[in-house]
Amino acid sequence: MTYWNPVDAYGPERFAADLAAAGGAGCILPDLPVEESEAWRKAAEEHGLATVFVVAPSSRDERLAKITAAGSGFVYAASLMGVTGTRASVGREAQDLVARTRAVTELPVCVGLGVSNAEHAAEVAQFADGVIVGSAFVKRLLDAPDLETGLAAVRTLAGELAEGVRKRG
Image (cartoon, rainbow, N blue to C red; front, side, top):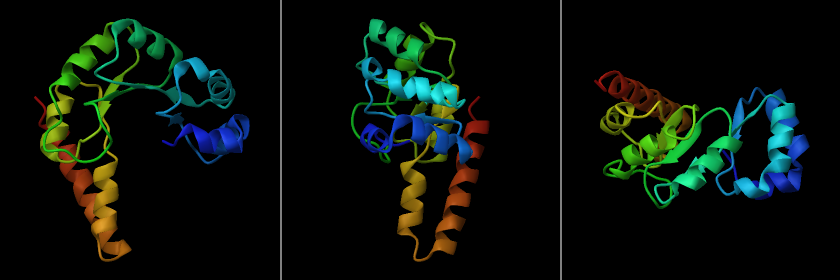
């Protein structure tokens, strides 16, 4: 996941080639509008990379269809409006967004934005195809006094999240 400006400055073709060579499977470019994504999508496809677009609770159904038709890999459903980071709860809008997105695509729909603990993961796993966690891992690393402790905290969180997903039903 990165923003479009660095990819554009680096060059979409070069970025896609280097990402694929490094073992990447795809890229999430949350600020790249689907209408302006042709150069990236072409480069990504040439290198076997998925293009993952983000949909939001405010997305109208017509917009969901347009975004998902241009994407590949999976759809990133933002659980709520706002910026990434940990939250007290995932938000009720996410379940509705997943249902509306599934109505217009065969792609898996994964939910992120604020998922930070086993309870969130279990909640999301009840209705989504995948659970996306980012900031909670970064926070564990940054809050640790050293790298070894940070990595241990990341491993612990990953285990807790996996346990939460397994409890979903």
